[in-house]
Image 1 (cartoon, rainbow, N blue to C red):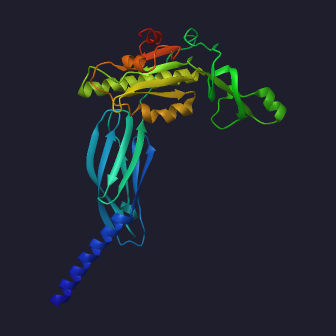
Image 2: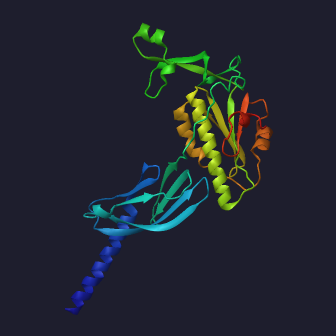
Image 3: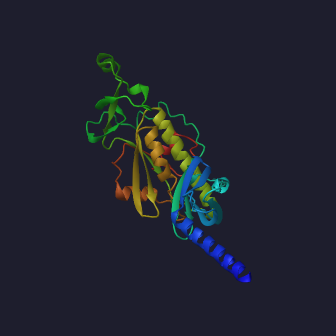
Length: 306
């Protein structure tokens, strides 16, 4: 009888070990950002696997501020474990940023991300840019469209999200199809939003300063887009030691650029982006440069500081 009990215990332990080993190897993790600060972590495994609860290591890193949280989570796998196969993870940090989420069980690693965007503010820019944009430039890019509607780059079919301002009404009525005019991109005649990533502040003050900067950059980009003005956003990448530039002609391009903006880790090296920009690009690359190193108090002055 004792032998049977011992054998049964050994068999049960072996079964649990084999189940856990199989589950670790075959179970997948799905990381879904339902909201900017709310992430669902779900297990996706074979329902034929016997019930098991697996321990996963969890790492959350804000690529903007460098904040990092390390801990553990437990997820159920296998049949009858649906009620504990999902965990809701809320980002409680007060800072915006591109949050990278890494989950590992020792056998497999899963990555996800969620972008927390700062609360932007409106800028009264109307009528302030006429002297900064040289839209009469006669050299245009042959590869990409832009904001200069005085020179048509292409005419294409309307797509959801396109601005109604670009509709070619005359041609649309003639061909009985909604068509959009794409403006041309004047080479060396664009506005550059230059984002500072080097500061004298350190630790918590550095995080606060960078939050002010990215908020100002995104606020200005939104205001320019509202006026139909294409631009570039550039900064010094402290990790790769290089200047980076992103073209922003519409709200979709801004959305696509946000993860990069919110990953621009600052450094306590002192202001350096202006020096790095002129070393790499020269002062004739853009017709207007808006230098952002904090909250924008007055729109006009950000163009007069370089």
